[in-house]
Length: 374
Image: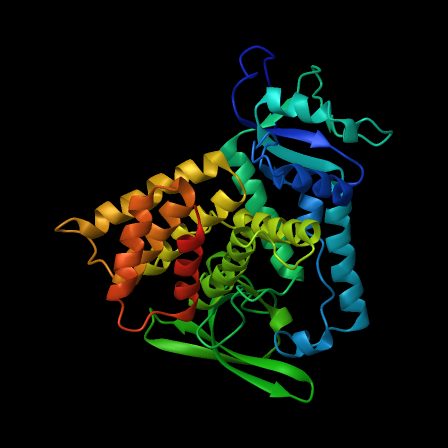
């Protein structure tokens, strides 16, 4: 990964992705979240952090999950896969990426909790300067880590092998040829695929039988499916965190639940750059990301998604634009209220909500939250 050296004078007050190191990433994340959830809301800590080791820390993949997704691997296959994953994780273990100004990071490093033997430190280049990663390169790196995580950690929003999915054949006569999954069958030996390969300019198909999931690789654009199901899961996580905040964690262990909420919000926000082709899903997702950024006290993210949400509204209300749906506009206005606390947005959200013939229970809970917010 290429990085460049910064100039102490020109970069001091500019926001960048700085490369730092720490030998205990789990402990460090807890400290970052403590600052992030501080009651004063001063947002003294840089709220954008990325710790590859923690993203790649997969959950145990159970046989039940594997039976529903891939041909159950042998012990040898599991060993090889785990070894590959662990090698990547171990290589990245000590690296921490913080998006902040040098002033903010200097303040972090001087915190009392960073005075011990194991400390957060700048990663130095050969010239002794602080290593900095450009935004575009950093996003590519995050995306690579996300892709690697999804290979080993089966998550609800990852598109599964199913009929119609495009794949790349990994071995055999048709190696490196793209195919489509024609059918899937569950046998005593595991999952078997029938693949369809276009031939003669699309006028004929070649059928390849008895293939296993290990024989194919999902194409990059097939790996992630930001669909209504995933967005609904994101919505529930964000809504729960908002309800906790509004109720001030009444009846709950405040520190534990706030930390858990923030960890989940931070992980969700890591995926915020994934593109969504469906206009209405994109609108709803961006509204949720605005609420997420606000709950994370991410001033930069909140500002960016404020602009996106307002642009959505302008586009939907333009004569030649996308025809607005009431629920989409409701999401946008309630998200803008959470972000700005401007009562005009809340009033508009409430009025739009009343126009819905059958509002969802989730949207009703969002409206109840903003009605209680000051």
